[in-house]
Image (cartoon, rainbow, N blue to C red):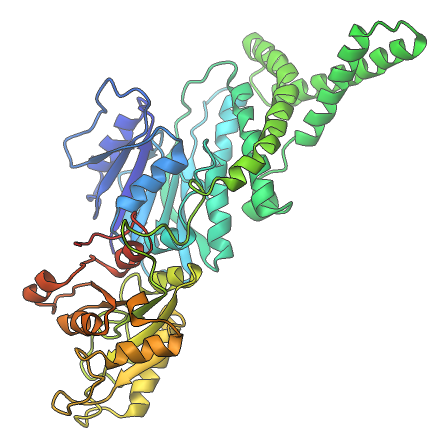
Length: 516
């Protein structure tokens, strides 16, 4: 089991604690640590410790874009996301490995436990209580691990969310909608309370604009499905309306009884709403003079600021929904000079499943890492799939056709529907036109799918797969295994390190690593 760690950072001082904790843990990270430098001003170096950390230059476009850059550079089966203001415990790596061990394929992500230490001997402030909400937040990417193939299948984070808090809920909803489960693990990170100014609660109201986008994307039940508290927006809208009515009546030239009544009723309603909000925030807190004063001032500002950002969010919805460049893509744009294939034809043994020579036992079938995710992403992108497989064991008398079919059914149980199936049962000396490297299987599959062989791509693990594709006029991607000869790798037109990368290469430039 391997995983890479992705940490987007805006240069907080807490980053050094996080990296030191990873370096000083009880065991090293089994993969890469990808640090995405998302600062606008990169004048001073980041506090990168002695152990190997790869620094990637972000676009300063927010945490969603930074995380996308990180996981798309990863090649591990899992990607663990940490925020730059958390501190993993000494056993975090081992605990995450234990969380990942034995997870079934329908589990797409695992969430860590976040602990926010609060002061001893006094009640927490409003800001401290706000951060404590991370302890019960669902899918908070302060500590989340996703299957990399699942991220590729759903298109990653939606970069139309420029701030934290909603980009993780949006991703979680899409992963669950794709049929995966998100489970809680046992690993723990600490999230110390970082210093914040007195107006922090007012600044956070900008997130109301993201709530408008969530509603547009996921419908009115998104909060319940994502485990997000209802909040006070309806009250904020009412209090803001009363305040505007009182202000408008006060500025009006009318001096009649009706105008005075509007000023009185609306003003009293605004005052009552503001007082209620102030008390709701003061009573659980330390009630010091400074805290009370801050709550009084900010409680007067919160309703109109929240309402403004909510309205602003709705005003930008048409533009955001038309912004496909930053929306998640289950099928990315093709690499320069190439088009997305209409069909992808997979070899079976060594490509979709671990190669067991002449296997006729479904119980011995083991899916290759990323196989289910790769096939699922192609289906989501509207690309047809099929399997083209040599099974000379039939001609050699080692297995029967019925056993081949039983193994094929087990393959589909593990990786999802990939048919139709095209199998050559002949031996090397039979002189047939279907046994790879002959093009017969490729042409038959293309004909059954109603596409030209030139619109197909063949993904396999040995040279005969590549030669069959070349003979049929199809594209070819080699995903080498231990049995792939060096000469076959050198001769392949395109090489990808794994199935996920191969599919990403075929669907978009952010995917695999290949040679033109």
